[in-house]
Image (cartoon, rainbow, N blue to C red):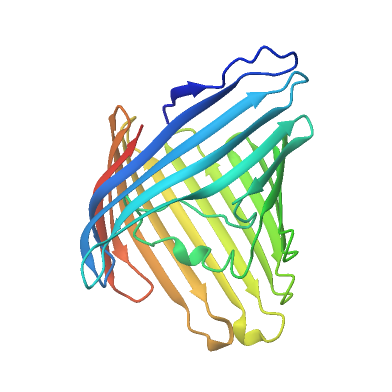
Length: 290
C-alpha cells in the first residue's frame, strides 16, 4: 500500500530529541453483495494514520489509528457508519516489539477468502478462535524464520500465544489461548505452502474447549487453494466446516473466487458459493489501495 507523507514532527532545537514521520495510508472497496439473506450495494473505506520514529539509541516507536466508514445492507435499507478506532502504540528493538491498544488476539488466524469483500467461505475454519477473549497488550519477536506472538489482557488476565516457522515457501503456525474467567481454551493450527509456480495452498484447524461441558465444544477446519494464472489474474477455491460438538451438526461453506489486478492499486474481485445455512452467496466489486 502506498504511503503519503503529510506531516513531520517539527525539529526541536533540543539535544536528544529525534524527528518522527506521520504517514497516511488507505484502502476502500465498492461493489454488490448477496449474503443469502440480503442483497445490495456495499462500500467500505479505511484510512490509517501511522506515526513512527527512532530514538537516539536505536529504539523504534510509533502509533496508529484507523478511521473507518461503511455502507451496510439491511432489510430496512442501507445503513451508514463511521468510527475511529484500532488505536495502537508500540516500541520495538532487538528485544522484539511491545504493542499496547487494540492488538487483537494471538489465535485470530485465517486463510484466503473468496470475493472482493468476502462471501464467508472460510469463516467456519476460525469461527471460535477469539470467542470470549480480550487483549490489550501484545509482544512479538521474529528471528531466522521463527515468529512468536503473545497477547494478554491486563484486566481480565486472558492469555494467548502463537509460534510460527517459515522456510522455502513452507509455513506452519500453532497457537493456544485461555479465557481466564471461564477457563475455556482455544487451540489453532495453520499450514501454508507456496510452490513458487503460482500455486499456493493453505489449511487450518481450530478447536474451542468448553471447560464446563462437552456440549459447548466446537471444532473447525478449512482449506484454500489459489493459483496465479499470470501476474494479474488469480483464482481461488475455498472450503470450511464446523462441528458443533455433542450436537453432531456439522455445517460447511465453500466458494470460488478471482482477483484481477488492474494496476495502480485497483483490483477487480468476485466470489460465488454457499454459506453455512445452505444459501447461495455472491459478491463482485473493486478493492482499492491508496
